[in-house]
Image 1 (cartoon, rainbow, N blue to C red):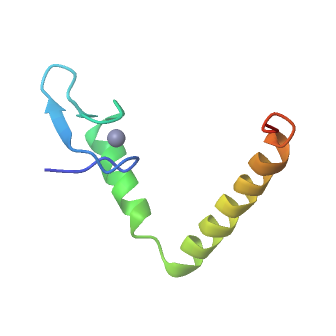
Image 2: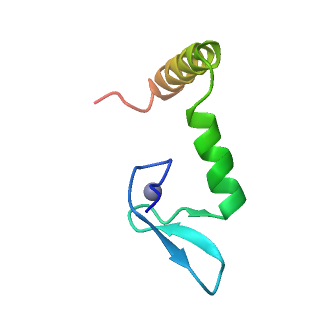
Length: 72
Ligand SMILES: [Zn+2]
């Protein structure tokens, strides 16, 4: 059984829609999307590093953008 690449939840095959849907977050994947997503999980190390630094930048953006809203 494949797992959701977004949340790690269990995916079930929807025969009617011909795609997988996640039981936890509701994401849906066609077979092509799922295999593309799984390929992305096995990217070479450089890509992983780049993705991590990009994610870090996103986090910083979020931090600064939200700072005004988050004062309590
Ligand atoms: Zn999910």
